[in-house]
Amino acid sequence: MATIKDVAKRAGVSPSTVSRTLKDSPAISEETKVKVRAAMDELGYVPNSAAQMLATGLTHSLGVVLPPLTDREKISQPFYMEILTAINEEASCNSQVVSIATGATLEELVRQVELMHRQKRADGFIILYSENKDPVKDYLLKERVPFVVVGAAVDNTDKVTYIDNDNKGLGKEAVNYLRTKGHQKIGFVTDDLFGQVGQERYQGYIEATKVFNLEAYSELVFSSRNIDSLKENLESNQLTALIVIDDLIALRFIQWLNNKGVRVPEDYAIISFNNSTFAEIMHPFLTTYDINIKELGKESVLRLLDLLKNPKTKAQKITIPFKLVERESVSMRK
Image 1: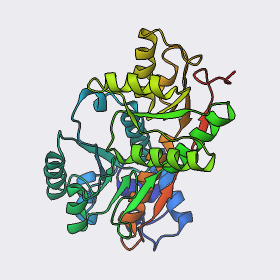
Image 2: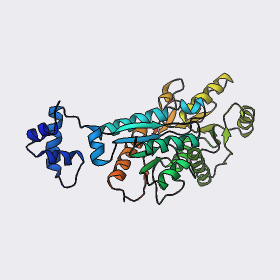
Image 3: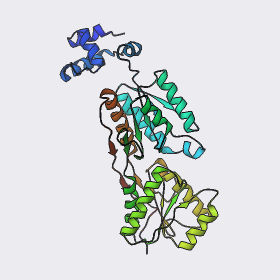
Image 4: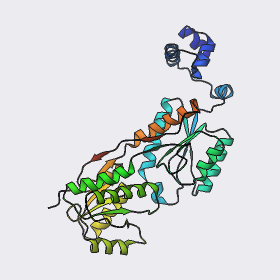
C-alpha cells in the first residue's frame, strides 16, 4: 500500500508538501497540487481518514437531512432519490462521503442531527426541505455548524444559503404555456396546502392569471379526503387545463381521471413539475418542467464545501434554472 513518502518521491516533493496538498493548503501552488494528486492516482494512494481527522479536525463527511417522512407518498417521491444520487456523486468527486439523517418528525430529525454533530460524523449539512422556524436549522445556527438548504428562502436569509428554483416563475410559466395552447380556464392541483414549494408555485399561478386577465381559482386538493370536493370544483368551474404540483401527484391524478372516463389531454390538459422518471411511465406522457435536480444536488455540495473552507462566506440565494419538456399531456385546445 502506497504511503505519503511514496507519493512524495513520485511527485518530486517533500512529504510535508503531500500532507499540505491533502489539506488543500493555500500555501501550496495549484501546479504542485496537480502534480501531487497525479502521483496519488498513479500509485493508488488512499489517505488515512483517521489520521486526516486528527490533523484537520474534519471528517470529510457531509450530512444530508431528509424531510420528515410521515407517509409512504413522501418516501416514494423520486425527487429525493435523484438529488441524493447527485449529492453523492459530487461529494465523491470532492473526496467526501455522505451520511443521511431521517426521522418521522422534526423533533426526531433534530436529535439525529445533534447526534451526528456531537459524534463528529459530519462536518456540515445539506437540508433537503425548507420550513419556517425549523428546529434543525435553529440548532445548526446556534452551534455554528455550516449548512445549506435546498428549498425556498423562508427565514434567516442573511445567515443561510438557499439553493432552489424560481418556483413563482415556474407557476407563471405554466400558466403562460397553457394560455398559448388556447386554455383560459386553468386550475391548480396540489396534495398539500401548506408546503412551501407548492405555495410559491401557486402564488406564481395567481400572479400570472392577473397579468393575462384570466380567472384564478382556489387550490384543488387531490387526496382521499377531498375527492368529492375536487370533483365538484372541476365540474362547476368548467376547467380545461390543470397545473399539478409534481409528477407523482399528476400520475395518480391522471389515473383517477381515467377511471372516471375523463381523457387527458382531450378533456383536461395536464402540466406538472420535476421531469422525474414517472413522467414517462404511463400514457399520456407528462408535459413537465425539468427543475434540474442534478444541478440542485451538485450546487448544494459545492456551496457547503465552500462554507467549510471559508466560514466567513456570506449567505446567498442560488437559483437553478428550469426548462419545459413537452410531451403528450397538453395539446392545443380546439
